[in-house]
Length: 78
Image 1 (cartoon, helix red, strand yellow):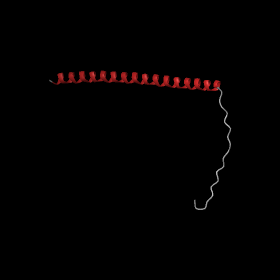
Image 2 (image 1 turned 45 degrees about the vertical axis):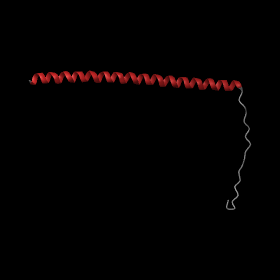
Image 3 (image 1 turned 90 degrees about the vertical axis):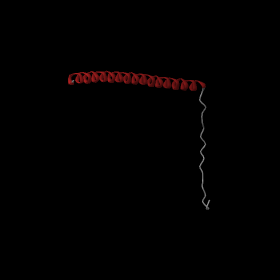
Image 4 (image 1 turned 30 degrees about the vertical axis):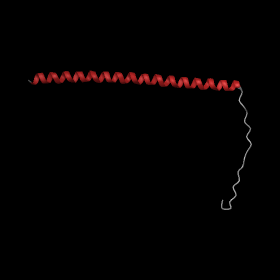
């Protein structure tokens, strides 16, 4: 490549194999983290659904109140 010499430095990295006990502990830790995260997400979603349902109920209640006010005004206007 255009007369340029590219040198690569390779380092020998020794990797220890993890023992079965370490793997089991890591899998248990990851499982616990995933379960807690999924539980938090589920609780948050249920809470949001509850809040949305409550807001919809309040809006329906306000709609009924406005309907009654308009009906009363129409009746008085006649």
